[in-house]
Image 1 (tube, one colour):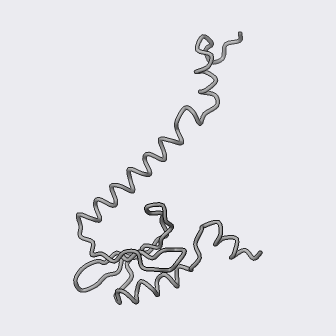
Image 2 (cartoon, helix red, strand yellow; image 1 turned 90 degrees about the vertical axis):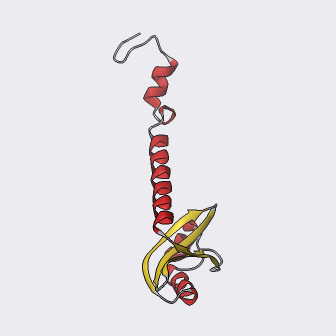
Image 3 (cartoon, helix red, strand yellow; image 1 turned 135 degrees about the horizontal axis):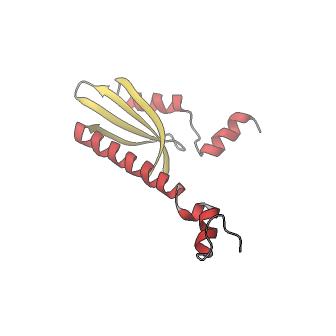
Length: 121
């Protein structure tokens, strides 16, 4: 199996970002301001922010089928809400990594509360 095929399976994407960009620009023929691959509602998608005369459009393309999932006009409030949700998700993920359950030494100390660090039983 070639490296490209392996990478596609690992990311669960079937179409390239270039093909997704072409599909998005077919819907809204403007200037792409940003693009990213993300997981939304359990689906892997390509998200494009496209500048149009009537505002910034967010066009989402299903990364597996290549179908347009969403085409909406974003306002400043929507963008701020999305940025806050992304920040909250990153904070939650960071806290999960710092959870005592992920640190064996902290688990050991919790299981043996009468012992102190550095003490010998």
